[in-house]
Image (cartoon, rainbow, N blue to C red; front, side):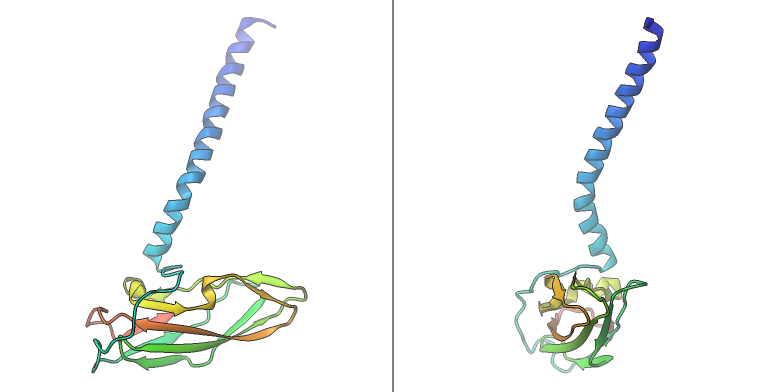
Length: 166
């Protein structure tokens, strides 16, 4: 083998190693980037119990919270909110119930990912208890009722009178 064939091999090897290192670094950068994108999109915000406490700070104000069930196409689940909307006072503790049924023929584990609209209001819906905090295991065809407890932060901008929890 002559020296001319080895030079392109080294160049290719160097390029491949740089590509592998770049891909590895990009993979690590995606973790914090994912959190930022999810928060900006209103997805997976407040994915742990909130420490907010009930208060009368929002007395006299009414906000409508709409419940929408959005599932990925081909999902193995059925998720139905007990009520489609609720009138509430910011600062007070409320609860909403959901029925979830697995349509799978085998045991499955799933986790709900809540989304709040408008996106700018997602930080004001403070969940104190939610089935979305942890993965849930379902037996084949199992149906269960879940409760979400939440407080709408009284600091919710005055112009907002309707929110959607999906």
